Image 1 (tube, rainbow, N blue to C red):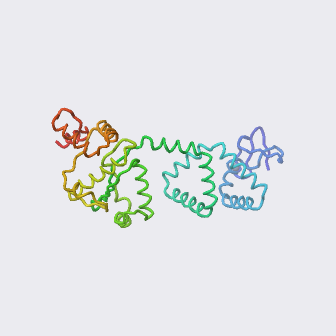
Image 2: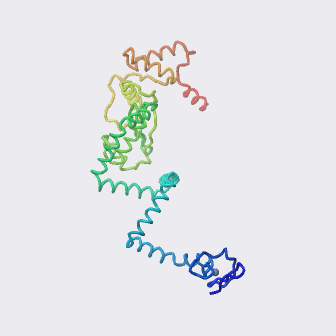
Image 3: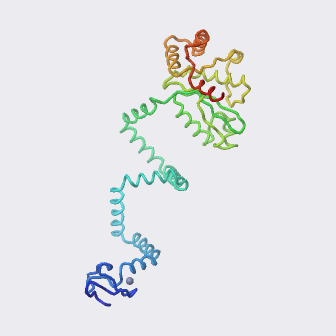
Length: 306
Ligand SMILES: [Zn+2]
C-alpha cells in the first residue's frame, strides 16, 4: 500500500492520488492515514448500509455495554435538543396523518395496558398541581363566551339548538359524544353515524358575555327553538317550548353587545326575565328610532344586500 509522499497519497481503492486531507487517520498504519480515501470509504459504507445496520442492531441486542453506551448517547442528544425535537414532533403530529394515528394508537394501547399506573400518575399529578391546574382552568374559561348555538346538518337542513355558559367547551363535548356514539339525542346521533361528521356545521346563534346566567341562556334557547319552529325549520331537539311561546310573536334580540351586557345585568339584579327586558327595550327602540340600540352587524348586512 503506497504511503503518503509530499502531502499526497494514492488511494488503494480508486487509485487516484489525493491530498492527505482527503484521508482519515489510522494510527496502526505507517503514515498514520487510512489506505482508502474518505470518498471511497463513504461509498463502501453506503453500499453496505443494510449489512452494517443489521450487525449494529444485533450488537445492540447482544452487547450490554454497547447498548448502554448507545442509549446514553441518544439520551444526551435528546436532552440537549429537547425543544427542537418537541417542536418537530408537534409539527409532524399536526401535518402527518399517519404519524398522528400511530401516536394516538400507541398512547391508547399504552393506557389500556397500564390503566392503574396511568390513573395513579394522573392522580399524583393533579394532587401535586391542584392550585396551578385550578387557576389554569379558571383562566381558560374566564373570557370564554356563553352562547345559544346551532348544530346544523347541511344535507337535510335539520338543526340542533343548544346553549352553554362556555360554548367552546360544549362544542368539544358534543363532538366527543357523537364520535363515540354516546350522544343522548338519538336522532342527531343517528344522522351523525349515517352522514358523517363533515356534514355537520357548528355555529353561534347569539353570543353572550362570559358567565351569563344560565337561566337567561335557557330562555333564549327556547325562544330560538320557537322562532325556528314558527318558520317551519326541522329540529333535532326533543324538548319543545311552551304553547304560549310558540303562539306568541317571538321577540328579536339583535341588540348591540354593550346594550346586551347591560340588559343581562339588569335582569340579574331585578329578577326579570330576559324576554320581558327585551320586550321593554324593543318598545323603547320603536318609540325612539334614534337610540340605535340594535346591533351594528344587522345594519352592515342590510347594506351589503342593497
Ligand atoms: Zn479512493
